[in-house]
View 1: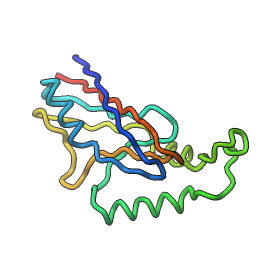
View 2: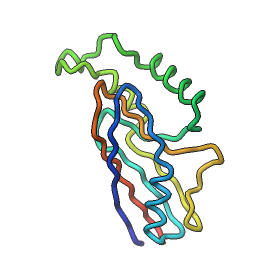
View 3: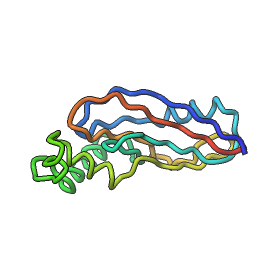
View 4: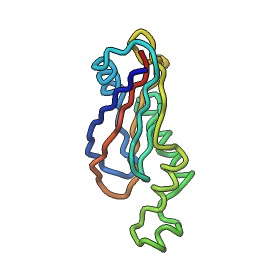
Length: 139
């Protein structure tokens, strides 16, 4: 079964900076000529995550508010005591969402829901240069 791997690079602002990756993933899939299989979208690192959401301003604000309640900035994190980099909250947030998502595809199209987009979320406490890896497995 053929496997194709590619990557993109994105500059992020940190602090829950959200980027819609759906068009880039679709473009990457088209370049493979695969028809049926699975796409894996992966963000290397411990302070960013990949997930899906309806990429519209209300849902994004709700998402950001929920993340802030779940793992708030400004409280004590043991990571910060050890490394003194102030980004303990970003590690916790990223760990709970996870670094990747798998999306099936058929007839050369991602099988996302009507309002579902693939997103990268950078939780770090500073701007970053992020790599996102796409792997397409199928036939």
